[in-house]
Structure formats: structure tokens, C-alpha cells
Length: 192
Image 1 (cartoon, rainbow, N blue to C red):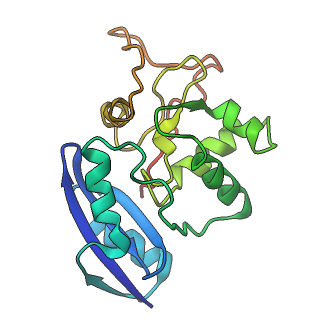
Image 2: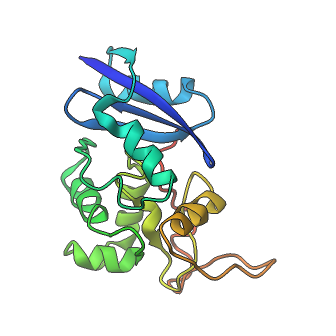
């Protein structure tokens, strides 16, 4: 298998993307590419990774997203390769439109698993295609920012790019959700 890789420098950091020629397979904020490439190799095995310019037009669409078009990532063909439950969660995430948010509990109910908000949070944490599968749009039930491995400041800025403005946290108080904070540590972007 040959995978195609590119990067985009954004105001929120470097975004790396990998495609297989027909589908986006991975996208994440990276400080360097070695950890990102290690995750790709663990996921796909011994693959050839080639640097290319704008695979599937994803880099151009990311540039448009960061340039002010919150819908630029809609419709990018993506193949995240997950379990049946993860796939249901990731498909549902793609149905949260830019400019909207949803709580973990609401998302769990929408996929027909109303008592599975923790499992939804875990599926979010394993999402290999950030932004295109918009796990940053999932927030706490009290509209608090919770659970984003890229950092809550980055999550807030992504939502603001899409026109969502959430209340600031009060200094010294944790952003606990009404469910007792169960999801406060659930990341969105896949991490080691």
C-alpha cells in the first residue's frame, strides 16, 4: 500500500494528512511528523509513505477552512477504519454541521445508544481523522469545553472559526459537565 502525505501550516499549528489515493485516512495536528508517522505505521503496517502536493485536494480544503469557510471540509471522502461502534460514532460526528455542537449524551442517543456517552467519548479519542470527522464539535452537557487532546484552547479556536462562542471557564474551576465530569478527560484526537 502507498500512502500520500502532505502538511499545512495553520494559525493553530501544523496539520498532517495522509490519503490512499481515494480516501483520507488520517489527519491530525502535529508538533513533528515522527509520532504521526509512527501511528500511521502501527495502523497500516509496512507501508510506503510519499510526500505529495495536496492529496485529494485536502490541503486546499483545509486552507479554505482556516481561511474562513467552515464548510470546506464537508464531503471529503474519509476512511477511518474502526469498529462497528466507532464507525457509527464517526459517521454521526460528520452529521454535526459547522457552527453547531452536541453533547456526548446527545450524540449517544442519536446513534441509538443513549447510555453509552462514555463509549462515545472513547470513540472520539480514537478518531484518526480530526477536523474532517469533527470531534471538536462535541462538548459537555452544560456547554463546557471538555475532552480534546489538542488542547481546550485549540478546540475553542476551532469552534470560533465555525462561529460557535462558548462561555469562558471561571478561573480556578474545572470545566466539569453536568454528568459529574465523566468526560472531562476524554480526548478527541488520537494520541499514543
